[in-house]
Image 1 (cartoon, rainbow, N blue to C red):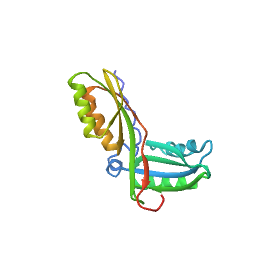
Image 2 (cartoon, rainbow, N blue to C red; image 1 turned 60 degrees about the vertical axis):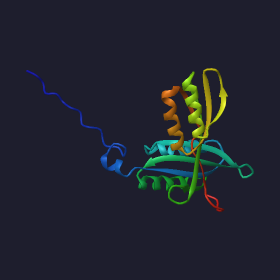
Image 3 (cartoon, rainbow, N blue to C red; image 1 turned 180 degrees about the horizontal axis):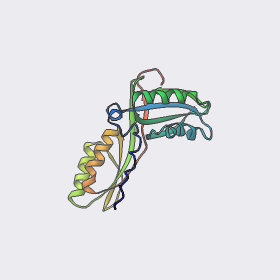
Image 4 (cartoon, rainbow, N blue to C red; image 1 turned 120 degrees about the vertical axis):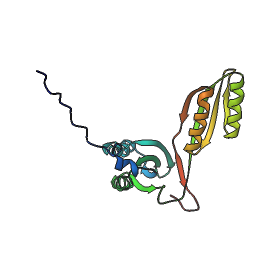
Length: 188
């Protein structure tokens, strides 16, 4: 006699797997002004991981040496309600001075730096240089078999350049992550 096969119950839906969750997922850029002290970045990142949200880009640098302040720029995705909740929870952390959702509260400029290594000979080298010129990428290193290009722009521009270099001979890519600042005379 054959025993019935038991199928385990499906895992509970996550915000990333449900059809409803996918319909309202938005990408947001958050600017977080914090004290420049040990452990602050770990606390900020822990808030995201503890709630199951991915950080797509993370940039941190000191922005006011005398005041010991750093700016953390985070690009993340999720439902608008979840992003708003994360913003409020970030504001409650002691080393956090200010949280700004640059996607909704400010007109912002976002840029990223990438270094792209491409291998190729003959026609592939010519094509790589032609495309680099079209994207305003600079050659920062060259050998007889490869180039390293430096490219600055929004994330979409860098993604497009990388995809065009893939069939030519893309070797590797290094990206800084998004840096953002508000437009006009007012600070973030």
